[in-house]
Each structure stands twice: as structure tokens, then as C-alpha cells.
Image (tube, rainbow, N blue to C red):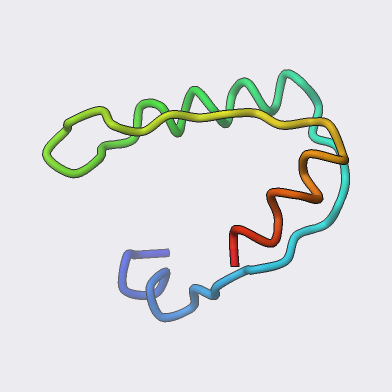
Length: 64
């Protein structure tokens, strides 16, 4: 699939399955995200992993 096909077929996802991600998969995803470029390569991004359900319930409304 080329970039044009990918762009045409993409979709926005606002709601996700509520299931736990295995620790190793999560570490790999964070590592990939860490290596992705950001604007002017200023490295301003920070990642926070939240696993406690009560904290997630408070955070989720803030993401909309």
C-alpha cells in the first residue's frame, strides 16, 4: 500500500477497546513512538503510562 492509498483509507478512532496491553508490547510501542520525529526535532514529547482504572476514568473525558 502506498502513501496515497493509506491516506485515502485512513480513519479516525476516538474510542478504543478497554483491554490491557501486554507489558512487552507496550514497551515496544513506546520505543517506536519515542523514535518518531516531532516538529523541529525539539523532543518535547513525554509519555506517561497509566494502568490504574480510576485514573484512566478521570483522564478519558479530557481527551475528547
